[in-house]
Length: 262
Image (cartoon, rainbow, N blue to C red; front, side):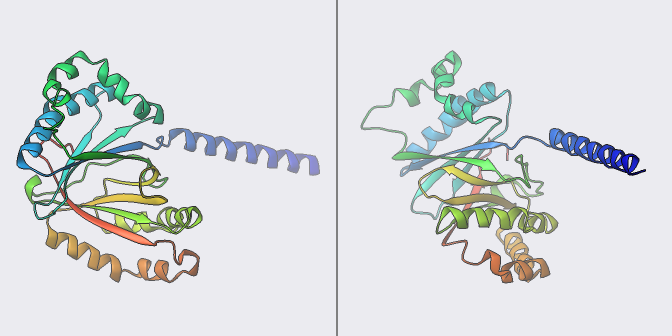
């Protein structure tokens, strides 16, 4: 009888392992994200960057990624440091590493981007650019196109960056989003998130970044009032295991270009 019971336990364990393996296999692989930030000062630079991105870079990246979505966003006109954020999705880290090589092999890109590529040293289309590489959170493994009802020009996209004192605290903040339920709370309140991700290469580390979207600034404010007033957040923020895991928070408001997929 003991041997039969033991055999039954083995079968049950095997079935459980099988179901776990199937569940893991059917979950989507986590996306890698590449954010390129162009800084510019003049309207002429902005126009040249728009032309380059819309007519050359975005179509080329779509060819490289097999038609993947790209987000292109701008800081508000009132910002003194004007920037364009280009958000690209990759299935593998290696594809980010070989992006430049792929572009240089794309004859159509080289033709479409000729004005940008051949810009004079004293007439550059930007003042400087920077890049950030990220890995999607476990609870939101792929990016999502927001479901908004207003025209793109009226929308508000909120990009947040949370820096932590140490790597350990950064992992703790990531845990707070995933296991702690912060991602789930944002979803329940319909924050229309584009992505949540941990920065794996960038100038401000350790940190994580995420983007939520709203129909308007008023819509954004109402959502955050609901967030801070929710019982889930009050429990989460009072939990001592998540204390002191953010040392600096940067909040940036962006609006999508007309040629952005997001």
